[in-house]
Length: 83
Image (tube, rainbow, N blue to C red; front, top):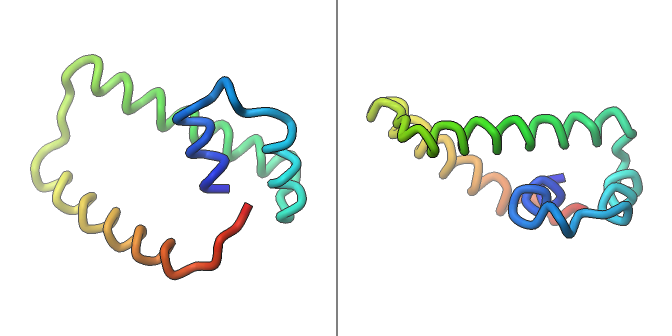
């Protein structure tokens, strides 16, 4: 799922039916795949909106987010690879 979301973010023109099929093979149903697409798209829209307008989060939010991001990265690295 995370690889799919990253591909949708970084190289959306390269996303194809095989990507969705890999998610199905990993146990995702079509509704869950749509949820991944919608959440990824919304997050990308919001970050581009913030970047485009020069909006910055307060320092306290950024430091908390940085710690959570680091913790999530550690957790993801500890998990076995998925589709």
